[in-house]
Every structure is written in C-alpha cells, then in structure tokens.
Length: 186
Image 1 (spheres, rainbow, N blue to C red):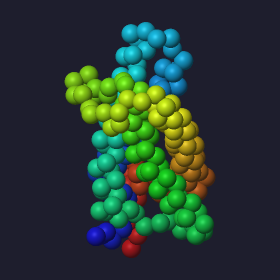
Image 2: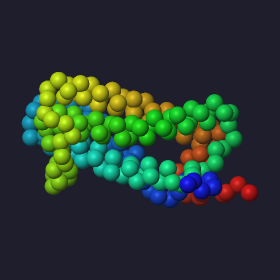
Image 3: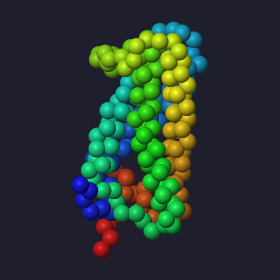
Image 4: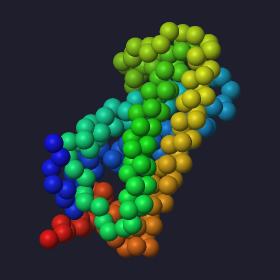
C-alpha cells in the first residue's frame, strides 16, 4: 500500500537511482565502442565489463522498482495534466527498458553461446539454448531497446534540466542526494 506522498523521493529510491544512472551511462558508450573492435582478448574483456555493468544495473534496479511500488513518489508539482501524463509514461517506459535492456543482452549472449560470468566469478545460467537465428534477432532487439532507452534518458534529462534551470522548481532537487531538499508542502 502506498503511503502519503512527501516532498522528496524516498532515500532508498535516491540511493538506487544514481548508481543505475551511472551504470547505464557507462554501459551504453562501452557497448557502442566494443561493437566496432576486432576480435581480440581486449574486446572479450570489454564485453565482460559491459555485461557486468548491465547485470549490476539490473540487480540495483529491481530493489529500486520495489521501492517505487511500495512507497509513493512525491506529489506532482503544479503543471498541466498533459505534462504529468507524459512524465508518468516516460517513467513507466524507462522502468520497462531498464529491465528489458539487460535481459535482452543476457538472452542474446545465451543464444549466441557466450556465457555471462558475473564479475568473472559467478556463471549465470543461459536463459535460452544456443541458436543462431534467435541470437541474431536478439541482437537487433537489444540494439533497438538500447536506442529507445537512450532517447528516453535524453528526454528525462532534458525535462529535469528544464525544471531546474528554467522553471526553478524542486523537481530535480527531490531526487538529489546532495544539497538542500525541498520542504514538504503544508
């Protein structure tokens, strides 16, 4: 059951938000970079790092999703209803993609016969059997989901900057782990 919304996000939500952001912002350019490399031990190591980032992001995002489902977010700040609908839709799609992107990468690795060994220590199970055609399809799915995530992250960051720099409202500060937090409305 959701509690009454506060002026800021719950601390666990804040603490989990920023590492997921950081991991995502590292994994995407690493994925683009590694794709163009020639087969070498360095490329295989970079693929491992990319997988570690994705799995870690997924592992941190799952409790973040749990916090979001169990704790009410801050009350909406005044804005037209259409903006609130776009914000909610963007958040839902971000949440879906933050699960779908690493899972599609894991599925793709499984289908292509490349194991996912988390942090070089823990072999994760294959999610599907090795099969070339699904592997190629999952490659396309993974790339497409990543591009969708990139677009939504850009929209999300742009909106946060707009709220902070142009509207001068508390939207960004409500998720910030630093600085003065907005006061609850009385």
